[in-house]
Each structure stands twice: as C-alpha cells, then as structure tokens.
Image (tube, rainbow over all chains, first blue to last red; front, top):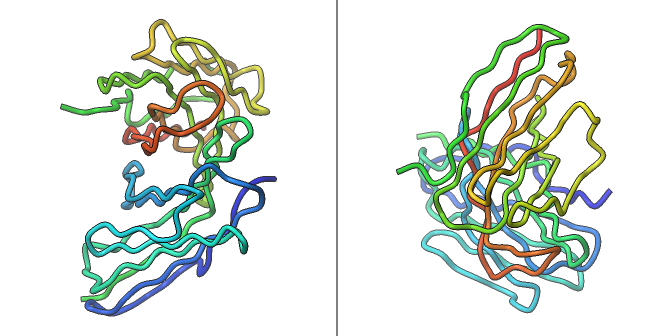
Length: 111
Length: 118
C-alpha cells in the first residue's frame, strides 16, 4: 500500500500553544499536501509543498519536507480553538497521478 | 457559490437498492474524483476522470459505476447496495491533468454524501 502514516493520531493542546503533526510516506512523490477536515465537513486544502522544496509558510502554518527521510511536518503556531479539526497529509506520487491520504491527526485545541 | 457541490448530503437506503450521488464543479477543472471515507476517517480514492475520460479505477466492486457526461460533472451510481457501502463519499476536482504531474494546485472537495445502508 502506498498510504502514508501520520503521528500522532490525536493531539490535545491549549490555545496559544504550537501543534506539530508528522507524516511519512513510502515512495518518490511529486508533491505533498496538507488538508483540514472539520467534523462532518469536507476537506479543505491548506498548503502544498513540491518535492524540490524544503519548507513553506502560509500564515500560521509551516510545512517542511525531507525527501531523504520521506517525511513531512505541519506546524500550526499560536493555535486557536477554531483550529480543532482532523489534519491529513496527502502525497501525489509520480506514478499514476493518485493523491493518497494518510490516516490523519485529530487536533483538539482547548480554550 | 459552491465550487464542488454534491447531492444528496444524506442518503439512507435499504440493502439491495440502487442509488446515485451527483457531483458538479464550477471551477473549470479538468479532473474529478470520487473518494470514500470510512468510519475511521480513512480516505481512499475510488475513481478519477480527466475531461470525461476514466483514468483511475481502483479495486472497487463492479456495483460502483461512475459516469461523467461532461468535465464539470461526475456522478456515482451504486447497484445492489450492501451494509459495507455505508461511508461518506466525497467528490473532488483539481487541475491535475492526465496521469500525473501537479500544476501546483490542491484538490477542492465537496462537502460529502453520508450514505447509510440499513
């Protein structure tokens, strides 16, 4: 299976703290993407990082990519209660054009 | 103006029935997808169409048949529904063309159809 893995599966923090989620994948990729899913809703695209990039920022989000370790991390700084959601990494592999999702991290930010 | 819209939002039906889920995107994207999310939130791709042509067909039972009348629509028809088909089905679209290579855009997802087979 090409499915990646995320850790932790669940993360509970206080408002204002930083949240870090990790993702590992298996074979060479075209890009890696992070999505957020609020309870009962669809997925929302947050950020995309290409295989030749090492770090990317978008607002309070910082994504890193280490292709030698086949891993990525998503950092949410100064978290807010509204950040409570499931976060998924997804990898676009060079073969087949399929976007494969990890199992997600459930983030709970307590006010 | 919903970018990717799916109907219905909820679908409760009995085993053995046939049902359809419709999806439309107004983003002008070339490629559309169906994903299935199970009760553990695991998302698995089912089908992908690029400009009305089927390009990805995962190991999905023949009871599932996608249809794309034009590149803005991708419908999913399910025959002889089984209990195990209960899940949330998401439609998505993107500018990714053909069999690979991203133009640097993410996918846009619909809000999902929660299918419950009883």
